[in-house]
Length: 260
Image 1 (cartoon, one colour):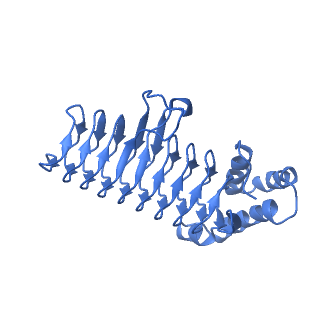
Image 2 (cartoon, helix red, strand yellow):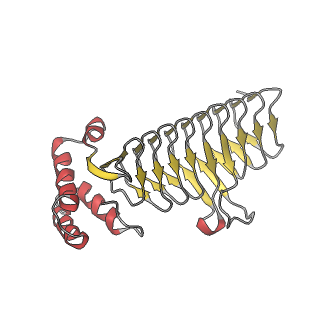
Image 3 (cartoon, helix red, strand yellow):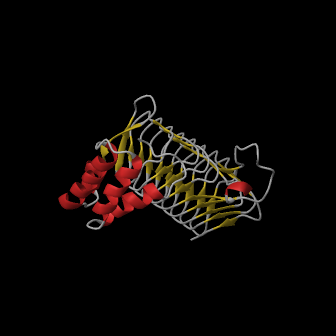
């Protein structure tokens, strides 16, 4: 099935456009952009390379994808953006390419929803099955796991990590690492407020797994122990739960302070 490109769209000769791609009116596709089959791109979009977009993505009008990183250290070096499959990228979303000093690649997985006015800065890494609500903003070098939900107007500080299945509540500003399964609520800066039990139930976690995750949360956040003491408690619990082991490994693997 041939691509459908509106007569007013501008597509650079070096761009690679897959089968069944549709490109809307007044959209500009620049050099070294690769768009996978079945992807739909709305009107008035800007796609800048080097960039690879997978198959079956939906990009709404006025999105700006693959722009230069907003980083004063960027000196024009070759940097890239990689986007997986079946993502839904809505109006006015902005996603920047990486920087040479940050690994050179911004990477977004598959089956994500990035709602209107979301911003993903340079060198971010986003997993699969995430939902970023309107105006959610990632600073540079942020890592987001799988099945993460960022509510509206959330802001994530640079270099922070957000673990799998975390839920960040509306308007929260996050300036530390958020472990897997944790729910964060707005309280000035974001603060942990329990585990994302409802989300875990919806994804098939049974009551025993959720109970083990809840015990791990209590050891870290409610026991009164310092981080070293809490880590030892989690190590004892991890022998009986793969989920607690993931929780512990995340805590041990970060460079930024843990959100506590």
